[in-house]
Each structure stands twice: as structure tokens, then as C-alpha cells.
Image (cartoon, rainbow, N blue to C red; front, side, top):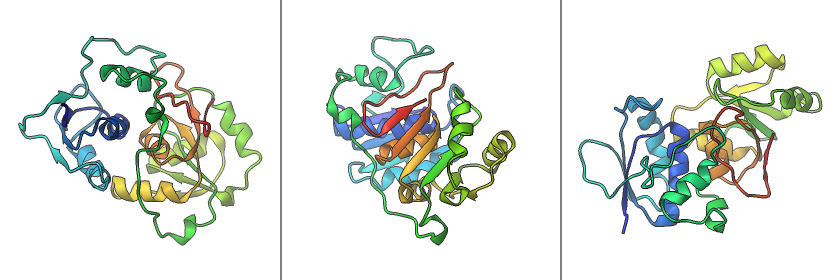
Length: 232
């Protein structure tokens, strides 16, 4: 029986790995920020630890320092490659002999409270768009024509907000977080997420939010067969 994961993946992938922790009753994870194979470091690990440790199915999430573990989450036993167009939800499920139609794959797996910020109370859409995994940018232009900016908030990095403003020319409130738990609490206040595949997208899916996700045309994507998740 697998009870512990060794994990060295990107930040969004780490959030998605918690789905499989919940399904498989994996309660201990060791996070390695030293690998040069992914865009992830010890600061990334420290940012996410508060969120991971807040989940009731996780007994311990620790930085990796040689601890023994049952499974290296990043390895596929059949050495299946990840290519452009791979459905990463089905890919990771196949590592554990979980059918891609298993309903457990499409249930929310994160639970947090809501961040108490008066600015967020009346927001209807939270936006994040990172520099990677782009697709149909015209969706944003069409969508933003019909939404009052007062109902929008951009979450993420200052550079991401600046790039979004430069490309689409719309000003909205901006919010950032000091750690992953606070970020999830911010996301949890707003009912709808719009953006590309990213850490914030992963958290929004994990919380069960309505999601409009920009499909990365030259990337692998996490596809969820859930009525309130749409891809463009």
C-alpha cells in the first residue's frame, strides 16, 4: 500500500498531486526543491506547504531531506511520455490504475476558508494568466467587453498583471498572497476563475470553482470532465 509520495514537480502539478493523495489515502509527502528538471525550488515548496498541511487527509508534508518513501510521484511505471496534447489527469491516473472515467477524479479535493478582504466581497471573476501555456487569447478580448471591471480581480504576480493589462488594456483590482493557503483562501471568495493552466488554475479546480480555462495549444493539459469547467 502506498502511503507516502516523493514529489519534485512544478507548483501546479504539486496541487494536482493532492487529488491522488486523497483518492489513494496517501497521507505523507516529501517535497524536493533541489531538482533541476522542473521550474520548482525550495521557495516554491515553502510557499505551498501551508496549503498542503491544511488538508485533513494529509498528516505530514515535509521538505525532502533523504526520508524514505513509497512512491516517486513523478515517475510513470510504464515510462509513458508526456507530449503535446497529453491529458495529464488521465496520465497520472494511469500510473495508479485509475480509470480516467472514475468519478473521484472530477470531485473537488481542496478545502479552505475564505480570505476576509472587503475588496473581494463583490468580485465575480478572478483572473490569472501566466507567461506559459497560451492558446486562444481572443476569448479574453471578447469576454472583457461585457464585464464591468468592478467585478474583476487579478491574482498572481505583478508582472503577470502588467502583461495582462498591456495586452488587453483593462484595469482591475490586483491581489497577491504570501503563501499558498492565503492564495487559496482568496480564490475561494470568488465564484469563477478565468485563465490559463497555472498554479492558480489548479487551486481553483481543486476548490470546485467555475473555471474557464485557456487550453495550452503547445502543451499537455489537465482535463477535467466536470460540468462547471470549460476550455477555450
